[in-house]
Image (cartoon, helix red, strand yellow):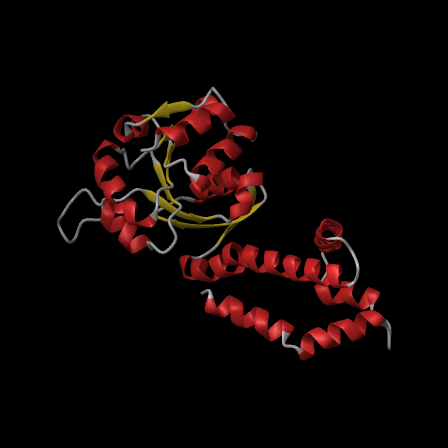
Length: 267
């Protein structure tokens, strides 16, 4: 299987590097294109087996999957450039651009200007988060005109970069808030807890390490036990104890409502 990644900046480059480390593809199966030579040089520094090109037309011709990882405002122009070189019966198109729905992507991809035309390929929208850089992304996948086998293939590809979940397109915005923006919210909790640790007497580096290990432990517990967070909270709270006092103080300050409001505001 051959994959072409158009745009190997932060996210596109992370996708290509992550896929090359997985079990499905080798670096020599992946063609990387970009307008900036600097980005292409970084890909070769990461793995000399990547195929490098500045010619999008040539790069997509033999690809089984074409991943468009450019900025949203460049998606239409990139598709206009490559669509007549694509074979819609055999190739899968993946867009990483947030905010461009399938109806717009299909409009860009349509080779026939007649209004009744439905000449479009299997198209996927994929929204990762920045943890894709370390192959720990929570990635959302949505499909249009795709078979079940194509859906499985794309989900399996992005499972190589963390965890991938197939969802309906109408949940993409909510997924972006929960996982893509959500990673920033998690970072903000880590920052706040680290600052609190300093106030309690730890050096900043010590406080950050303690918080990071604590958060990782909480995640590991939930994943291993497949439990609800409240179940694990109950295990460390006793009537009149210090943990319940701390939790109550956080809730009085609006912890849970603030998180929910932040998520809704990001949607």
